[in-house]
Each structure stands twice: as C-alpha cells, then as structure tokens.
Length: 387
Image (cartoon, rainbow, N blue to C red; front, side, top):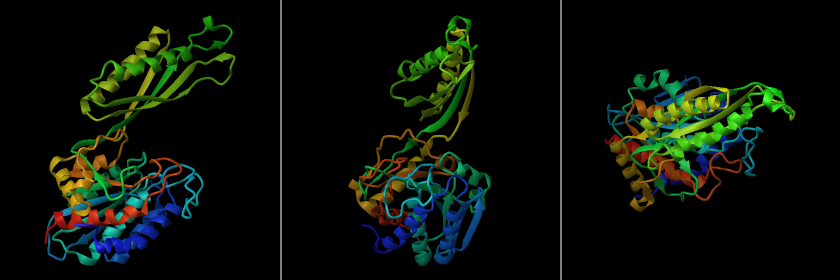
C-alpha cells in the first residue's frame, strides 16, 4: 500500500505548520508557543480530549474510534529545539538567533499533527489513539516529566510508539531493530585536585594538569582494552578546564564528558572503572580526584513483538524493501526510552534524504518525508486498533 492519498493531499498544509514551528524554535520546557499551537490544532480537529501542561508544557490529545471502546495506543512527538545558530538559509529559518530546530522535532510534531487531523476525521478504528507532544527531549528528560505527571495511567495507554527522522536514509524508507536502538547517555565530571605554584617552580606543585592528562589517556583503556569489542561503549572526555594564567600551575583541573552504552552490565562496568581509573591515576601523580557520575537517559529498547509490528506497518506504507529491520544502533540517546520502560512499544527511523546531519547548524527537515510519516501513524492506528 503506498502513501495514503489524504496524507499526500495534506503535505502542503502540514509543511506550513512545520515551517511555522521551525521559524519559532523554543528550548527544553519553555515550549509555550509551540505547545499552544499544537493544542489549538488538536482542538480544531475535534479531538475528544486535549490536555495541556503535562510535564510542565506537554500536550496530549485523545481521539476515540467510531467502532467502540478498546485499547489505547500512544504516539509520541517531541517539540523542543536546540541552542544553535541556524545557517540553513531557508526562507523559514529561525527568527530567534541562537535557537534552531536542528534535530527535526518540528517535522516530528507536524507529522503527528497531520495524523491527528486524519484520524479525527475518519476514526476508523476501535479504541483510542493518544497523540503525545512532549517538551525537553534535548537533555531535559521531558518524557520522564510527563510520565511522572501520570498521563500514561490516566489515559490507560497500552502501547507507545515513537519516530525520528534520519538524514542520509532516503525519503520513503524506514529503519528499526529489536532491542537497544539508541544508547544510554551518562555524564561525568572529574575534579583533579593538586597544589598550585609558580609555573617556573613545578617541583613545588602537585600539577593537576599533568595528572588530568594521564587520566584522559588512561580512560581510553576502558574501551580499547577492558571491554568486549562486540559490546558497544563510548567514553569521551569532552572538556578540560584548569588555570587562568600561563605562568601559574593551577590548584585543580575539571574534566567533563559522556559515556554511552547499550547494555546494563556495560553501563555498570564503565561507571565503576571510570571512577577507579580517575582516582587511581590521580593518586599515582600525588593528586586526588573527585568523580561525579550522573546517569542520564536509559537505553532506548525496542520490544520484540511491537518492533515486528511497527516494521510491518512501515512496509505497508513504503514496501518491504524500503524497511531495514536490522539497523545498527545509534550511540546517541533519546528520552523516549523512559516511555518504553513503562509500556511495550517501538522506535522507528524515517528517511530524511540527503540533508545535513542532525544537530548541524545547516540542517532542515525534509518536507517530502511528511506524507510518509503521516501515513505511518495513521496505518499504525488503524492496524493496531482494527474496527
């Protein structure tokens, strides 16, 4: 079955919504204008329930099928942008310097709005669809905030599905896999404490710069020499800060970075060894190290049956050859993982074509993908909730 005719007809209108959102990006939980835009659209479509302010600024719309009561299936889109200066050059580029939809959340929101309009018009299913629009995916754990506000239990959501665009994957194609498809994302801060002195008298110091340099090198052994090569692990020291003057050895150096894993045991091991190596290496240089390790988003783990189902729906829209069910996991993170911890479901990627990469200042969502995303959501609803 190709893209739905109605979805194709809606493309220009939905693209207009998408570009409006793109022009007016908002960050984290401060998506007040975007959330109001979404809520107004859902009300105009005739959704049976529209609730705002979930997880501070999240929105949920409930659409009841015309064939009676039944299960409730949740579809989620994210609304927030990134703190990036956009360089796409598009007519609809960000009007707010330093904020940009460089991850395509504008497209995700527009596609789900398009599906919501279609489903509210046809209602050709038994049960209900919950369309979920969340804030703060980009580092703020907006999905968890919405869960903590109880929306899943309140609306008795049985299954939950998410979708993200994928640059370089051709428009009209989908990709997914069972199990971990996106990594757990943890952060760490290591403070290496030494003793400062004049830079011309290093023997009077305990140099935290030298100690931190050895720590940075030593941490690489966690991946290269201590982890099974078949078990994905990333340990990245991303920043180092110490001292202010070129002739002064500082008292301390601060390192920050991230750890990405796909398995719980690898995550536990990485946390343990990072702490041991940082502290042990510091001691070897006469210094000390304080480690603050913070666990962030968990692994985005696709459930087996729901992944098969989602892939089958995508095949109905795009054809079996256009659906890759064995995609390699991404080591980026996604807070839809919290929803998949609470309910069975699956996360799928939709082709965005030959565009700039995600989180790139030149990125823009490809409006040619809109009919495919709308068709996917509609077909998922009507297939999971048969009349």
